[in-house]
Image (cartoon, rainbow, N blue to C red; front, side):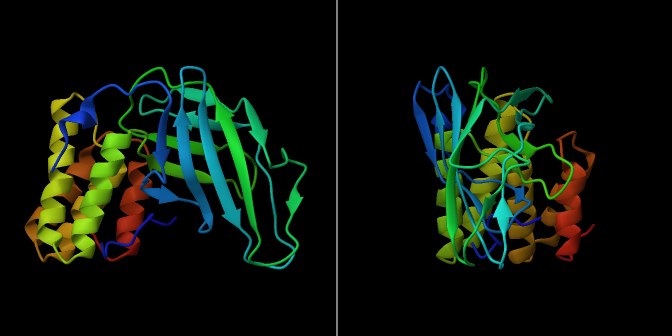
Length: 230
């Protein structure tokens, strides 16, 4: 699994507001994913559908790709929305065979509309082998923008401000009655480590371990693989 960004990396009240119809989330952030070159270019949310615009780049000779009919959006409460249709990609067991390494395939996956405002969602292909997945996707444009601002702060060398921003997002989610997603845990813990604040990293690692968030074990394993364990 790969984090969207390795941490080299003003909270908006709108983070907790309900979205309007026809929202578009460009390059949504996420916690972990299965395939290195698979990307979510944008998510479009309307009253009638949730649409994922995606791409995957081939890195090997003889590479191929497909989307299984058993692909779902999974909400924090475990409820699932099953794939309605796909465009630009074959349905398994049919496959798209790449001609060359470096070739990119753009495709669209359409699901029923999200009926609520989850703090995060997962995209999971439930299949026998080599299935794709994204965990902890941010489906809210304002929250996604706030996360991007925090990444930007860290990229400019303002790691402490970025850390404060992520902690603020987590507090806003809790105050709004939402469970904190894996993306926020990951970045708070990694940034605390990066800034040398071991006590804070340990505190949030403990919160993660004792939390009830889905995929918790995966996130802990990912941190452990990077030498972060308390």
